[in-house]
Image (cartoon, rainbow, N blue to C red; front, side, top):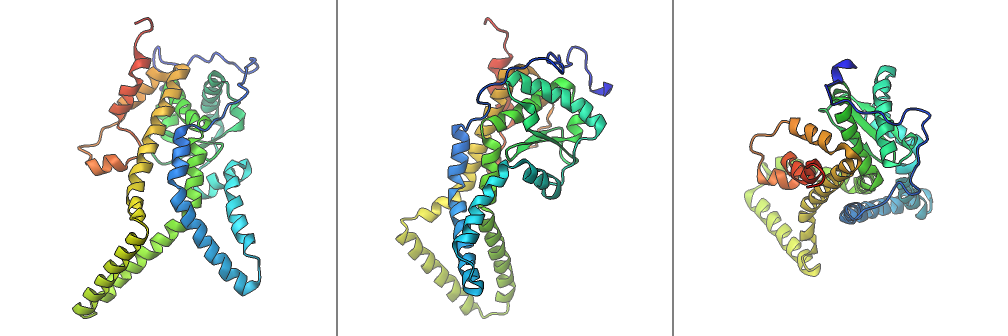
Length: 314
């Protein structure tokens, strides 16, 4: 794709096919941000496990299937995040991704080979997928999925595409991607229950319009008293759940900065800065939206990249 080329901005493919590449003995790790993400998802995971346990009790009473079987299967299902064939099914049928077409792979594969070679990582262990929606970005999921938007593939110069891929490789090698997927998976029953409760509440509001006012007020007072009792018995711990979305978003922003540092450490700092500079800024995002965003503001990311952009020797 010649339109991706810019003078002086093409990626230097130093590692041609057949060149000997030395891989690191350990190409994966789990940093504190990944551990923090898992810890913050623990309440949701415990809630999900409780719901699965209740369903298992009902299934045992109805069919005689031992309680431990569905609970064990649910716990073991998290291992599918590291099973490449299962990840491929997830990518195709849940995330609605597609494999790169031959002409797309001709552009993407050499860039990915260069990025992983610089990192000392076996790039063949990962699966490259194409997403039709979204801007000129990429993302990582599970243990092996590297997702590139078609817009990124068609519009970014190869050096900037390499910088974006190096950022996503940083998420994988630090454990961010699999920690995010595990947290999402094990908290899924709790989220489904939350959606069901929200739908019930909406239906209740419609029914409440035909109920006498005194009955609605009485029910509201009962809910308040029960909530106060629960908070008193648990020392107010449920209030911490309200802070979880803010904490999860804060950890998400930290993982993005660490992935930026990984890309910059491989020599892609200037190209990553060009990608960030080209991103359009939103008009006056509110404070609440900023606090709940898992992505730092581009200016924040550029500030942290600054030391990688200064000439050496200063």
